[in-house]
Image 1: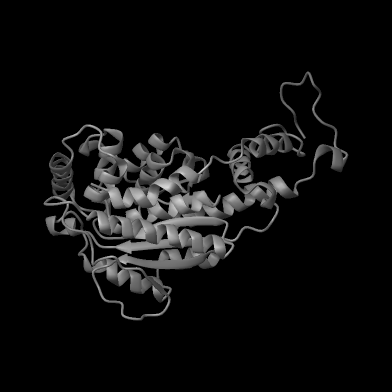
Image 2: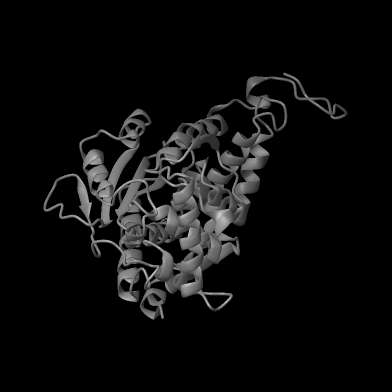
Length: 365
């Protein structure tokens, strides 16, 4: 049962409204007046129109960019599903805090404020500075044997994400990226993908951090066993899926997406694990979908299944499978470019440039 979690989520999900269709149409009309052939900026026009529909009259203001990394451990690592030991989650969080990871480089380069959140790492960080201390418990339970979380743990993790989204809004952050760190979390994301989409473990389970062929076969079998253990019903609720086979960081990202979209913020989702959280969030609040942008497409096969499920086209395809929010932050300069073109290009009228003849099928400038 997930009554406590439902009590937290239900009013927020009900308050999420889709981005403004009127502003979306206004953006499309404005894009067609700019000094370029119609549609010649391709997907940049789609992205600009989506962002304007979210930001409305604030779309002319500079974007305040931020990335939130949610870190947690997973009990399923006891089953040998990862090429790396569980301790790496703790070690990588320390690496984030000393500015040594890929996400640190990219966040600095693209002027995105970086927030690292301990929501369930199996380590004691004491009062280490620079970390958002939000630990629910030291990792989830082994979901092959029992539910990954209790309802109380799930509710707490969801609330942490919601609270951080509200803090982001209060801080004036407008372009929000989410990422994660958690050894074992591709197994959780694979199980979520199967439970949500009906895909088979063979379709949804990849090699994660790089397990060999034998370990991949074992991991796939374990995902099948997890699904058989938890889901006798053909249609489990999204919160039951999250409680039984999710992770604390996935739950916190789910709450963050719901809180951010309630506050009308653009959310760039990173790879497979972040998209699993997005899929749960949209299952709970379908209107949240219009605020989501897929930063990239991961090498993980389950990621494409989730992108198709959410009808999202990734901004980038770079064969990455790192996580940490890296793909989401890499998409930020493209999104900023799309919005800058929308707000700063001259129109045909303002520039005194002749428009295409009505009978012309294609315009050239």
